[in-house]
Picture 1 (cartoon, protein in one colour):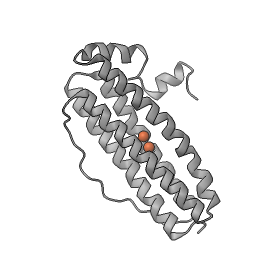
Picture 2 (cartoon, protein in one colour):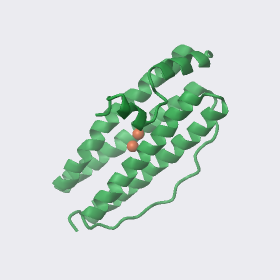
Picture 3 (cartoon, helix red, strand yellow):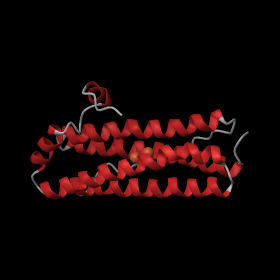
Length: 175
Ligand SMILES: [Fe+2]
Ligand SMILES: [Fe+2]
């Protein structure tokens, strides 16, 4: 195998972290849907798929380098939040936590002089910049809207926040 046991274990842990984020966003999506906020719920549902893809991409890397895959247990995510802004704030904090986890992984890969893993992780470093930026903007909007959640929904709908990736690709904004 091309990577050390230490890097292997850390990558496996990150697979579980990404799948955990997927579960957390799925629960958030249910909570928001329950409030009738379909656009915001669809946005979090889309994040669920993205986080799963993040996890599977690491899993495939682990398999590609001939390392041992391990899928860890997931904690049950909260199904309720004090408010919509609190939900988005929790999501932002989660993204900040994942960013630290990715940066720790990068540090470990560099310590181990594991340049394959270091290169692989760059995609995640860049992705986290985008994820934190999106959640920060969403939190600002949620705070601006305050109790006017319908305004928030209409605004997010106008900018296609609840649309699927396929719909976005159809509009030609897929990178
Ligand atoms: Fe992720
Ligand atoms: Fe994320």
